[in-house]
Amino acid sequence: MSLRNHPWPVLLIWAFLVFELVSSLLSQRWTVAFVALATLGLSVAPTLLAERLNLRLPVPFVVAIVAFVFGTLFLGEVLDFYNRYWWWDVALHGASAVTFGMVGFLFVFYLFEGDRYAAPPWAMALIAFCFAVTIGAIWEIFEYTMDQTFGTNMQKSGLQDTMWDLIVDVIGGAVGASAGWLYLGGHREGTPARVIDQFVRMNRRLFRKAR
Image (tube, rainbow, N blue to C red; front, side, top):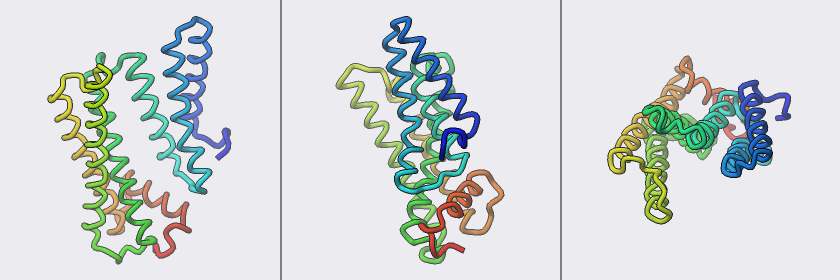
């Protein structure tokens, strides 16, 4: 996907990050410059990786990835959205959990080459759900490790923050996995199920048995 083919929200975020990077370097705000550069790099990386793997990503996927990285790193850390808005961390965890639930389903569906009859829909959805919750649990372990090792404050209020994050991960993972279940049942009206359908259609070579 060339630069001009990216959706305008993505181009707007990238332009903002480049502006912040340049202005921070000129004003010698090294921390902000580093975060802006890291955010820009991490938001571009999935698109480059997809091109290298010859994957085609639906526009909602690209926008969601870039917005999530931008919201987590730059808005969350530089503009302090985590402390300014109590719901910011919850919203990001929920959105990422939904996405990981969908990714987990697509991975399972890919292993079956798109054969919707290779396993019961509920089984595929359950595996996708477990995948999303596992990613969320690993992230909580990472936050704990960073706090204990480097003295950071990623867990914010400690146990309370961790438990709320896990609860949101479970809810979001269930939503993402349910989208896969709905897709297998032929119900593709909702946005998550429609995105799954778009991904399968755009990467038909990976899902040869899909109908």
